[in-house]
Length: 448
Image 1 (cartoon, rainbow, N blue to C red):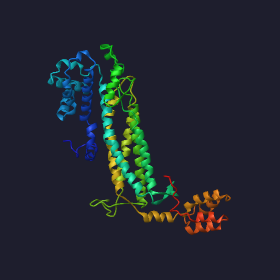
Image 2: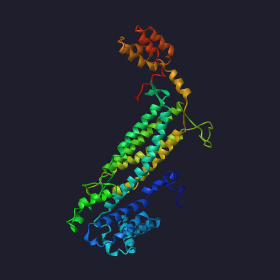
Image 3: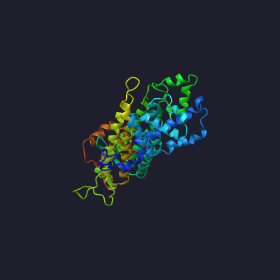
Image 4: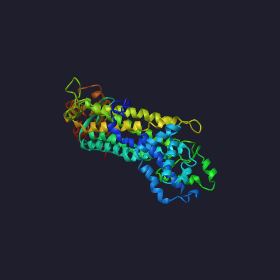
């Protein structure tokens, strides 16, 4: 069967493909090959500055060499895959592909310095974090910040609207709708700050991390310093003491960090879903949309449900990657190779979640009548404020007095509260302070 959006096994490459097409830039097989080619080409160029055997290399050809990866085409990628089919080794296929390119550039005499003294993971564990860095700062973080902006706009818009809070599902001290939205943007901003601090590292040190072949061929060169500078030129940090592969410890931290961001967003999805069910939020009808196949009146909170599902699936994969990748038997086994090829999948589900959540948030409007009605029906929440002010005024056993008045009673009204206050033997100034309290103005100030 021909591969298309209807025949694809994964919804990432089927139903949702149009939403995450851009991820092919960093996480497709084509992208991995292109980034590998870049590492190999840049490594060769770096060698031309330190090896006597490359002293006669024509530096005017450097641009032509870089064009190999800068102008990398699908035909080039197909050629690499064709070579791989014959030799059954994906990274060696890159080397043979570059040999063909060198011959075209009449660089035959320098062919042996392609992939010189390296192992496959020097290429893979440099190419993959390069792609990840480009994705993070070029796409993921901007998309997350756009979502943050949407949340922030709603927080500002709704900051002055008081709302009954609910702890343990029970009516609690009032808050504001905007402040509750701000809780989520604040949490995400904190995680984003941590995310941007996670080092993006590469492994580059030969077959078992000791530069064995490098030093065997050129014992007079400080290969550690060379490799540090080379990896830094690619925008990464080189891991100093390794086996054949990257530790993946910092990558695990990065994935766990992204998982925490998704968890916060799941929390937001569930709160929005619940507020919709409580009729605190309404959803703006979208022309042409159908909410139910049988109940025409419904506007289901599908955007929040879709987002929650995708964030959850992303987190399951993030968790496996973070738990598995740092584990490798002795100096290397191959279990990381097949697993890390899926790294784009949780990113795709996360971005689908971003899109759905943002869409859902933009459809929300406040049902102030319902919010205000709930506030007015819950004067008992002032018991916290009243007993606290009475403590300050040295009134005896204020907590117990309010507990007797309010606990377990579901019909405490303004009149009940005011009658209680009027009976208190306290200074008139304190009494007036208590009488000014309402569920609408007892919202505190978290922002100073």
